[in-house]
Image 1 (cartoon, helix red, strand yellow):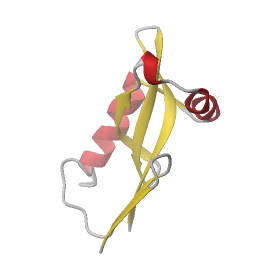
Image 2 (image 1 turned 180 degrees about the horizontal axis):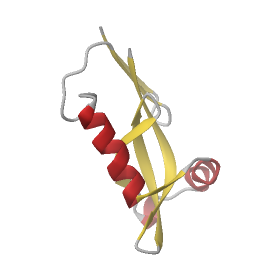
Image 3 (image 1 turned 180 degrees about the vertical axis):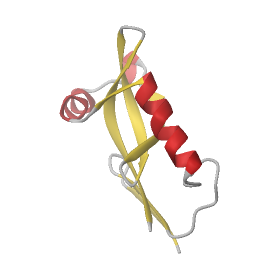
Length: 95
């Protein structure tokens, strides 16, 4: 079974630090959305401070690994998919 989750993280690129919402499959990030400054809350910052920071190279390597394993959810149809959006309170089960 594949489990999709989200988390807030810091993304380090070209010496700058950005708050992002990461989308992970079985704890491996596969994409992210940058959070606009006017959308940032203290809860997002607190969670990001507790979670892993990602670099451009790390995100590339994670994405490459998922593609090699045919497990990237944006590129491949995956069976037994469970989606849990922790901060958005949405669950989708596909079996």
